[in-house]
Image (cartoon, rainbow, N blue to C red; front, side):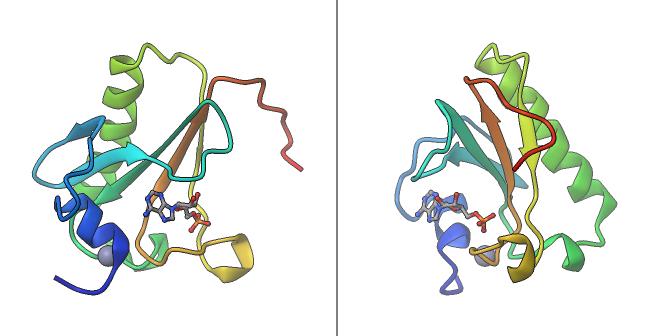
Length: 110
Ligand code: AMP
Ligand code: ZN
């Protein structure tokens, strides 16, 4: 396994409690939540960012995991965010979808 923290988490290295997982993706809580609900949906294989993802099946798996996780938690209103590249706020270079909910979410964002 690489040195990547999300590779480790997604593949069970820390026994993280998953909101949802299957053989391709894992969903877990963000360590520094910006809202009462803040999940991260990640592929189990290492993909640096959305730029590097060319597997349409995996793209579907990731969005499906968002959908399943929110249904599981009875969340109907939520925001999904994918920061791609340093200039867009990406800090962890393993693709992840943020799922944010549980407080009013303004649009457009600041
Ligand atoms: P981004 O800025 O889009 O790359 O988001 C990275 C997110 O990963 C931030 O919201 C962090 O709080 C979160 N994060 C970093 N390390 C961990 C960790 N060990 N477990 C859970 N979330 C983490
Ligand atoms: Zn990784």
